Image 1 (cartoon, rainbow, N blue to C red):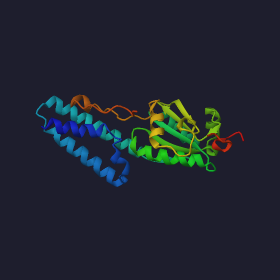
Image 2: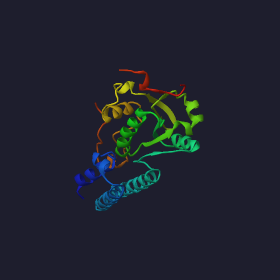
Image 3: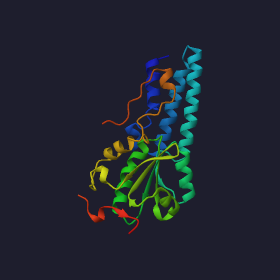
Length: 224
């Protein structure tokens, strides 16, 4: 068995936010994932160490099931949920979830949408959704949302952080997606890697997390 090749393939599994994933069509993404799993499985099966081989195959099978389930739950996409109960269910059950509360009459919500749409396929392990505030009145009141755009970060079903308006992003309509990426990473709702167990078996070391004028109409106040 070529251990360096297994390590390389396993590293690709624990780096689901590989930049190349963001620019592939969904069908291509599925084909590439299946090819990756098949290649890694073949390499692991050639391992002369039976204990390591069985352990590696079991971890690989669990990872395949996990990724299949996440794809079925629309991970890797940025979509809208209109039903309030479904929003509550998703935010409560997903380990990591980013929810953008928006209003269609506000330009800055559209800007936020564009940036989140770029991040969703990059951070496959985090669920990204948008919700129209008029569809979720109970949730808006429960979370005390007053100003839009409002991005709420849920980790293990708990609201850990929120980004209100653009103040923390330079307070300008034009800002790099990397600025939002860094801000979201601070509460742990997005992470560069998601260890699977293969990195322990084959000494894979995933990379670390992300490194490194206010006018009255710049924010949308729900009380107005």
